[in-house]
Image 1 (spheres, rainbow, N blue to C red):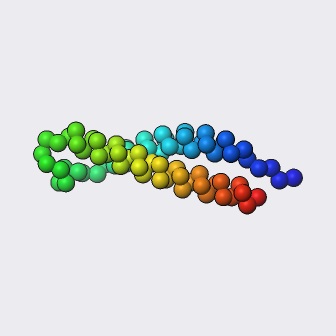
Image 2: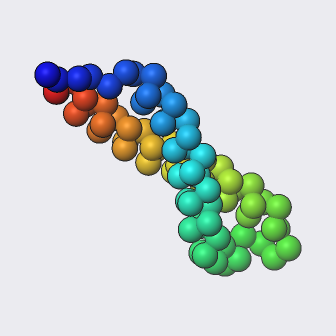
Image 3: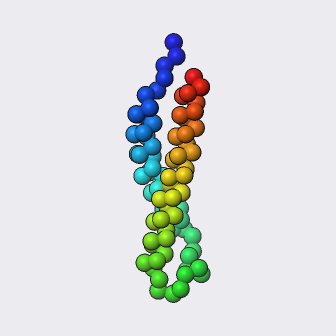
Length: 76
């Protein structure tokens, strides 16, 4: 007997994984040195860019990951 996973599970996991992935991307991006790209004493701009890039990359990572599982679920 083949059992399909409820689509609500994917929605809930997408939301939870978004926050987890965004946090991991944010901490990974903190290891990079952005002082050469920005002017001196522009820490607020660096933090803002870091947060925006983290949200974008976190969303893209989770969307690709969950979409893969949704496609596998449809194939079953």
